Image (cartoon, rainbow, N blue to C red; front, side, top):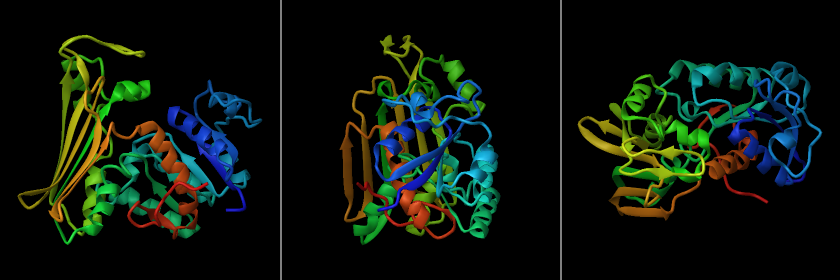
Length: 333
């Protein structure tokens, strides 16, 4: 790769700022724009905001349309929200400016079943503009969908796929710890679940991405969310969880063909989880049991995969793409 890829970073929360770090440290990218709607970030040097060793001389703007129209960039890294309806207009705006999109929006990873009208709208717009859109991350986008799908390549037949992602959340960023309900009372936890504000977003999309790759059509899915309760006080650098309160979340996705459960996704993230791991079990011929001890750090892996995906997305056919229909993504130096 001789020519540097010109990139705009859209969204400068914890993941966006770490993405800036990854982009700058790699010699293949030229960061040419930074966008965020937070008034406290507007005007700041993106290098200082991302805690780089020195300023970059590039300042954050909230005038997304102006920057996207004026700047010469091949791709926009979009790290603003997990909600497809909220991010939809941002994606369409980027597309209208003729730029490829790499996003971390969980609901955009495989929206063809859960949000078909939005998926079609984005796909048509991208095809008309000749650009590609991909949403990915460590999960969804890799560990609980794409990785097990690839592992079935050595199978003569597959009856069921089970994936476990068990995380010790004390090593994750504070927003993630709050996202899984750490420190809440059981009643607060349940109220947030009912309001749709507490869940691992993307579990259903992962099931459909995995099923689609296997040629399965799921008749129904379940997404079951429960708190994991602390039996004693737990103290971390960021928060204290009292006994009887939630340490985090245990969420199980189940995908069925008829009455048969063919996909089981177990997502568990708690403060002080004793045996963190990522594990894939394939029931078939041959059966496979693969585990990553200690698991994969989600923040680092998410930023790495979106940066590594950039050249692949630029070269991909126009339209809304998924991890199952683009060239393989890998680290490159």
